[in-house]
Image (cartoon, rainbow, N blue to C red; front, side, top):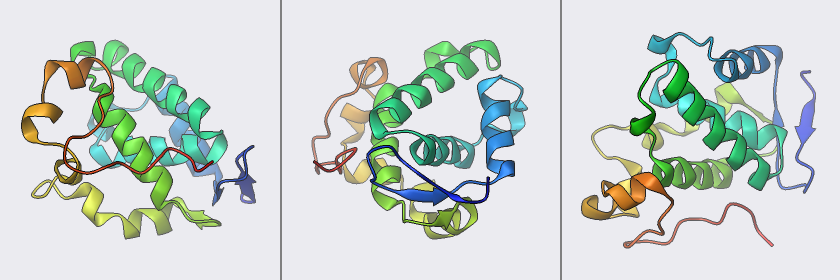
Length: 152
């Protein structure tokens, strides 16, 4: 499985290997240890789902997976934040490059992981991003337009 896998809509080709498949499988089966469910792990799940499926299907897989993990493993379903999930998925999709493996992608995305400067605050005011409305369902940003999930 080291070959590049193309999305059905031809948007991106990422190099997914067996360790990626094992990671995603452990996450989706809720067998990923809680201490490994980091912000980087969230981004990796998004990258993997976007590498394996068309963007809309990938987004639903990401949403469902995080909700299931938050419920079954963390016992904190209420911590799920839909706007953060959708916005990060759109940003990850835009940053992906053809033929790139997870390690290469992870090396390039330091700005997405910087807790001192949360990237979503470039798009959202704090009051909107941290609102109950944004947690419950996706809301468009109020500061800067997000990249689309896919190009038409």
